[in-house]
Length: 95
Image (cartoon, rainbow, N blue to C red; front, side):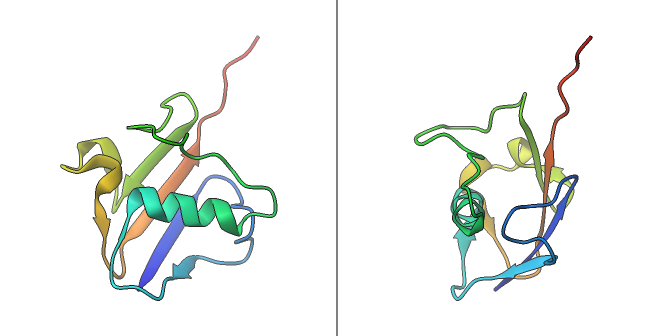
């Protein structure tokens, strides 16, 4: 199963990749983010253990251009072959 990735930052461990292949037929968004974290030389905490949602001040995540929060199953949404997951880090405002 191949999942395409878009982002506004270079995802550690996937510097030259635009997609990730998984040897399974189904994976949830939560599992996908966990696997991306494991691929990084220093794991990125996209999601805190046991969390029901991503921190909206840190991350904006979409599945096929739909915010994951608008998907019926949220983080447990099953990704399908060819889906595109967009992960954007939100810039902090400062003064």
